[in-house]
Image (cartoon, each protein chain N blue to C red):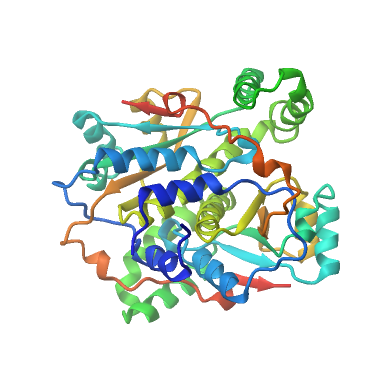
Length: 213
Length: 213
């Protein structure tokens, strides 16, 4: 049930940042459910999942977001759009909710998690990283984006990760206050007209990227 | 050659943050080459790949890093360790080098990329994001981490992404100056003694994580 190295690399080679989506092709419900599960299964620091995946579906909303994205057509033309919104800060209530949910899943008394609570609080709520918790949360969201891109490629679903939009306008349009938009990803199927699909993939060579010590 | 949704989710379910590695099991060279290629194929904003993957191999170096990681054994016991080091800032030289490499790969005259140069420079070198280019680069590194975790899972290679270390000590030990350590990932094979392998995976339910608009 594993994938061969060749198949894995073929999938990752197949992937590219799709510029032109086929407007007529939508993800099947079952594929979208798979990608939602893949996003849910993303790793995150402490398992805190400090983000929301906002899915704008209404066409007029997608058009507003496109206007806040330099008019880029992927925002409206792709089958689905995922807006990665990271938590602004980690509150004691976040920690409570997380630990209660974790204890319930694992059938543990909450007292067993007091040491973990102290660690989380001492780090992200009151500790040295409390003031940069929004940045920390954004990094976790990007980890989820990386997982999504790889997962979509395995299923031969096209994607376009994007940063070319106004985060503050996104927050306003989507009514986000405790979270902030950090990146978006369009999902669907490439149009045969997308010339970028044929462009040679450029990557720095291993000798530059890897530093063996 | 694609993976079925069931196989993809099985791989992502199989993955967990491995706490105890089997010290006696090393990655095969060919698997490590595959993971290096997967890391190389990670998506990044503009394709700039603003990071280095530092691979400490000397046992005494791994031990020093373990000391800078609260003594966590994964740092020395896993087969391989990847240190994700993000670029501190994006310089005009970075842009030059990138565009020259890109032009060479695609067989384009450099003049064809002047518009792209203006965009990059206007954003990350002199523009509004220049002062936070280190944060931006860190996010790209986390995207690569997400890709690595998914890729390793497909190959049934265990991994432990970690933030519990001193970034400044890592930078010093590894002699990094133009890059800064943002996260690390141990790779190898789980020990049968790792109780965490059996722990029930906790995730927030879709109704909490996803916000449909």
